[in-house]
Structures are given as C-alpha cells and as structure tokens.
Image 1: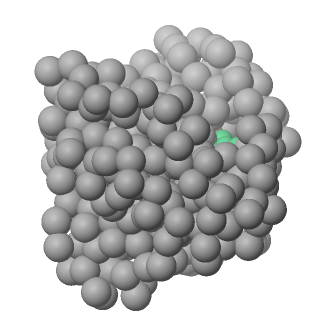
Image 2: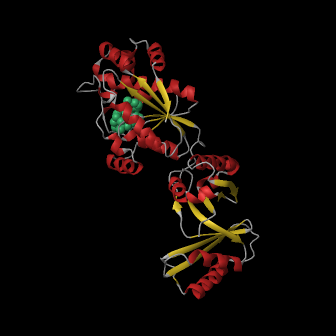
Length: 387
Ligand code: ATP
Ligand code: MG
C-alpha cells in the first residue's frame, strides 16, 4: 500500500511559544528545499506537526525523500502514513489493508490522539483494532518488542496509520537562529563546529584562509569538498576563500616568531568579522578545543578573542579527539579532512610558539603592522562561491 502522506514530528520547536509559526515555516522551507520540487501537493501545519500530502511524483521518490529527512535539523522523526476517517470501523479496515502486506508474527497497536474532540480512548482503540487484526490475520499481540508496531495518530478529523518511522537529527531548523560565520580550516575539527552551528539553527557561511602561492591549493579543494558534505544540512552554503599569504609574510619579517600563529589568528578573526558584516552574521564559530595545540590554551584563546567584537563560539571546546573523530566519520567529513594538505597556519611556524602569551606583548608586536589596510586588502583578494 503506497502511503499518501508523510507526517513530520518535531519536538523542541513545539516549545517555542510565540515564535512557533516562524519555526514551523522555516522547517517547512528546509524540507521543501531538500526534496524534488512538486513532491507534495500540500505541506501544512496541523496540531503540532506537519502533514505533507504526496503527489504521484513524491510517492515514486518516497525512499529518497525519507533518507533526506535524516539531515533536516528540527525533525524528531517522520513517517509515511495512510489516512482514513476517524471512526473505529474505518480505522480497522485501514489497519487491515496496511498490515496484510507486512511479514510479521507479533504486533502491537499504538494509538495517540491530539485534541479534545475525539470521542474514544486510545486504550479502547488499541484493543478494538488489535482484536480485529488478530481475527483477520491470525497474528499475536505482543506489547513488548513485537515484530511490528502499527501507529495510529488521530488528529484534526482523521486517523493516520503507519508502521515505519525515520529518525530526524533533532536540533532546530537551520535559519531560525540567524546567521553565523564558521572558520573552516580543512582539518578534522572545524567541520564539526559548522555542523553544531547548523544543528542549533544557525545558517552558516564559511571562511577559509589559504597561503597560495606559498602553499599548494590542496586545502582549498578539501574545503570545497567538505562544504559539499555539509550541504546536506543546509542548501547553498556561501564559502569565502581568503589569501592570508601576504599578511603572513609581513608577520614573519616584522614580528617576534613566537607570536606568529596568534597574529595569524587575530588577522583571521578581523577578516572573518568584516565578511560577517556583509553577511549580517552575528557570531563566529571555530573548531577550537581546549588544550589541543599551543594556540588553544586559555591564555592564547583570550589573546585571539581580544581581536574579535562578535561572540566567538567553540562548540567542540570540551570534546576529546576520539569523540570528534567518531562524529565526523558519521557526518562524512573525516575522510576528506585527513587527506594531506598544506595548512596556512603551519607556514613559517617556529618550533617553540608561545603557549601563554600576554595580550600586551602581542599587541606591541602587532603595532608595527598597518592592520586596517592589510584586512582591507585581504578582503579585496577574497573569492566567494555558493556550494
Ligand atoms: P581543525 O581540524 O579545525 O583545523 P585544529 O585542531 O587543526 O582544528 P587549529 O588549526 O589550531 O586547530 O585551528 C583552530 C581553529 O581555527 C579551526 O578549528 C578553525 O575554526 C580555525 N582555523 C584554523 N586555520 C584556519 C584556516 N586556514 N581557515 C579558516 N579557519 C581556520
Ligand atoms: Mg587545523
């Protein structure tokens, strides 16, 4: 039996009071953007869930649609369903039509109702439909771990029946939290930071710094590939690639080598913030992890952050490498990240960088550079594309 509907259940957005319809509309937009055009003849909000009526085309592509839903933040789960009027006879017939095509020995019925206008209890519905199926199909009821569960959702004058649920990734719909910049290095960590930004509803733009021609272009190619993978969570990601080489050359000749990486980072932040202004982004995400490398001590993060005026967000701050590796393998960015490249931060890097730099020492070094002009020139050299 081909399902005519898909029910979309969200959990957290249900809690958002006055903003609820804003959240629901973003979720709807994101669902539509992730599936072939014309898959639904309608997609409506009905009593705290979305109900999509599948077109003929949508029915043909249903497995593809469902697998795309695994990446739509804000979804708890979705279910392909068939629909019937809200009375016991119709529901029994519909359950029979649905289950007679399935292979199973034991089953349970799980009815739910929303709204106070439904004149029968879910317990009675479970019993009546269960008895009907036992009688017609000669199967056994088993409440714990049955082979098959048949769900009956009753709301808004109809009953929707289904046996399969596809889990969504949870979180909030991309876009509801506004925009954010993510600094993407091509390494393992920063793609996960971008993932977490999107997971909590930020719409991201990415910034990557390279040192071409002092390095090869491998990091830029990797970052494009990583952006493509992240595109399964957000359609159309703006990627900025910015040359940092000229600034790094000056830092090398004009300043104390032990502060080099910190000075690179302070420039990266300023340039990222200038791009954030264009993008109307309200925060900067990085993949920093406390204590992972010399530039990520509390002292050095403070020195870098002092160059920022937007909030700097570090969703990985408390994760171990193993956790990060596991999660990026699941997202699909890990294998790209471990390809060899020439990271711009390793250009001209000394053996012994400062691990506990003091802001005033770093500022003193930086004072010999024409910061504003260098930032401006880097932005003029930036390239951008939508992936
Ligand atoms: P990653 O795997 O993200 O590169 P990492 O452990 O190598 O992390 P660092 O290279 O010290 O850490 O960088 C810390 C963070 O600074 C990165 O997660 C990223 O957000 C940002 N960053 C570093 N290098 C770049 C770059 N070339 N372009 C953009 N952002 C960068
Ligand atoms: Mg790195």
